[in-house]
Amino acid sequence: MNVSEAVLRELVDSGVEACFANPGTSEMHLVASFDRVGGLRPILGLFEGVCTGAADGYARMKDKPAATLLHLGPGLGNGFANLHNAKRAHSRVINIVGDHATYHRKYDAPLQSDIHSIAKPVSDWIGDPATPAEAVSLAHEAVEIAMRPNGGLATMIVPADIAWTTMQSAPAHKAVKITKAPVDAAKIKDAARALTSGKPAVLFVGGRVGLERNMRLASAIAAKTGAKLMGDTFVPRTARGGGRAKIDRLPYLGEMALAQMKDFRTCVLVGTKAPVAFFAYPEKPSTFLSPECAVYEPWSPDQDVADVLEALAAELDAKPADAVLATPSEHVIKPGPITAENFGHAFATLLPENAIVTDEAVTAGLWAFIFSEGAAPHDWLTLTGGAIGYGIPVSIGAAVACPDRPVINLQADGSASYTIQGLWTAARENLHTITVLFNNRSYAILNMELDRVGATAQSERSRSLLSLDRPAIDFTSIAKGFGVQAVRASDIDVFQTAFKRAVAEPGPHLIECMM
Image 1 (spheres, rainbow, N blue to C red):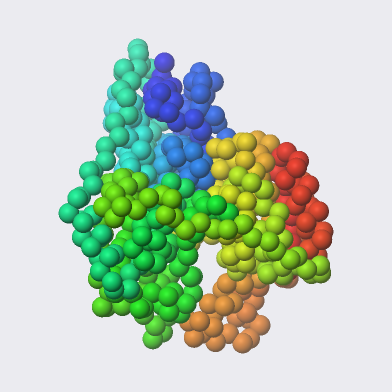
Image 2: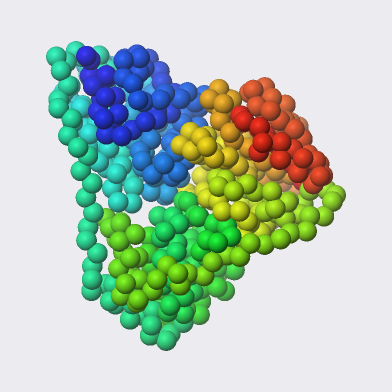
């Protein structure tokens, strides 16, 4: 076998099952190796940002590594934004990046670049083998990085000449070693004392705390101690719905976040760090906790959040049964034009049980999030790193990971345009994704931010940078062109009919909601 086949076999033997790929010339031996290596599903994306976002969505739902196959530094660069989101989500992702042959690098060919510098901000580890044997060893190490207790993002460079080198036999496969640090008993006791001190306290959580069992434990701890349970604005994956633990999400708007956090005098962090503003604003603080608030961190990234929560619950004698659960809710859907609020009522009513929701509708989807707290049980995935173009790719990965569950993507029109070609992959793979696209013909959040930062843009020349009309984008036609069933809805009744049909029928669908 050649090294490229040995590398893919190492990934498969370590449990990697999906590879989202956009290969080029340097990766052709890796491409050919898919023929000889079973168990690793290759999925083509028309743009690298689709591949990296899909790997993120897959990892969030499967809780095991997904691979990408990218072409040189520019291909990795094209996938950078959704790798940023994946790193913020602590997703388990392994990037395989083809490179020029080692002897060809010195000639500075047109596609030569500094792959290490591109990879560094979005990687926890970078491997660059110098020998065939080292390539297989590094592939194994990449899996171990991805399987850290709270995820990891590994980038492995594979030079073309190493990929095509013949090996007599691959090194014997070793079991993936998963290591995690033990819980710090002293920090657990300190956190427990802080939560029961009688001072206004918040248990602030994020990351993998959003998984169902962890959420129950966090809610039980808060209920037992009287602390407020709050989560990051963007938690990678949250188990929600009627009968599941309730949690308040930190508002995106800094003014609202500050109002909610300023009175706490004790803050215990698990799975995340202390909350900060997304951006700086004139004469407004960058952090939300009071200077008088004592912060306790009984968790570190090399520990399993489940272990930390179990230990803290045991210290406080908090049981999962103590958790405060969301109650099923009923909604009144008003006929007429689609607004964010009446869409929220309809969405919460129609959301099927066990659905996966990917949310990239920051303004139009707000009410859908609020109203669905007591909806049918579901998982909610968010834009963890704030880099747009996430929704369609992540919905693809989630659907590949969970083919028996409908995936509903709440999608803003502006950010859809970044990775709209992902619809083609959904059609090609016949994935049950439902993209609900809110078309308000503007970057609505940027119009809001324009005022919040104190900038003035009254002329058409400036405002044109925030509008998406001239010409208006026809997303229904674009979706059909990519092979996706699509319909346009201008009133809530049409939306409901289209949504029910999309849930019932297999394959990808898009519903363009005119706002």
